[in-house]
Image (cartoon, rainbow, N blue to C red):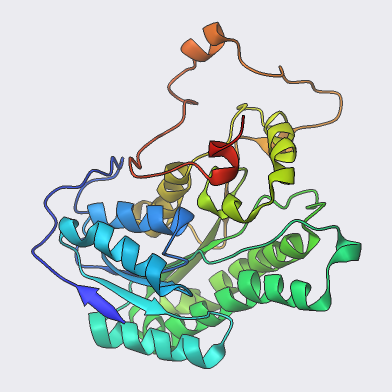
Length: 310
């Protein structure tokens, strides 16, 4: 574990839609904070005054994000932790409280999966995905509740996925995400008495570094998938981060137990309704601002599978 601290933040290259001091003085714990959506959320929260505790399994990734944020002037601690291990989670949350003195919010972002038909998934592979995407999130949320939030309140945002109507080719992930949705709803009910709000964000197809784990054979699958999205594109990390921060913010003070979909409307697609194969240059040039991509995160990079595609 290490930390960096400096004067209060004055500026940031992140182009957030939220006011600059929205999370000033608060400490937010982010799992999976070393890459992808977690890294993006860390940058946006840092630009808005939050102190951060980043959890992940790879020290070098966490250290890289910590260095990126050093010039913003926020307090950032990094904690190497496998969230699937109960004792490691309990100790990790204790370390955050020793370092920061409080945990105002938890972003349960860590996750991962691999493409496979159900019949080909081993018990080990099934357990790994379930424990990463469901059990680990439960352990983190429970530890934050018992060690701080039960006495002080707080907000939790879990990250699920677009699993409506099944997840063929990733059934292990679909099962875990459906479980996380149910956990979110139940925790919201049971923990309301402590002043803890629990919500979830369900990203659709998002161009994030999480796709770097996919084999090249997935490229045509991803391209075909976009054709089933009414907004005719993938989302980006900043669009997911904005939804997470909204649910953490006072604007969502009467929202708990909900799952906010950020998916371009994909679950609304039905057989017999055909979308254009792609936007013409003329159509793209006149895309309304309301549906154009929100590129708030200037430091984002496209996943390898899309970046290297012909």
